[in-house]
Amino acid sequence: MLLAYLLDVVLSAVVLLGFIIVDGHRNKVTYRYFSVLSTLFVGLSFGLQL
Image (cartoon, rainbow, N blue to C red; front, side):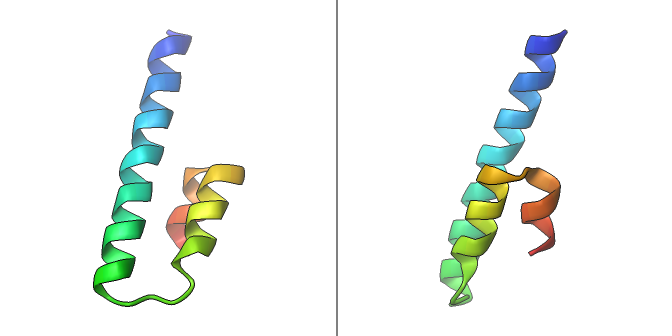
């Protein structure tokens, strides 16, 4: 059960990071790497808000 939860969180983080990078580049967001760093160091909920 723990492995399923871990896989879910890691997969969600990878998808969110891809979205942040692609959409940030497409819309020329200057500080998109704040969202990347916050996702890596704090978690999905924090990176999604930025």
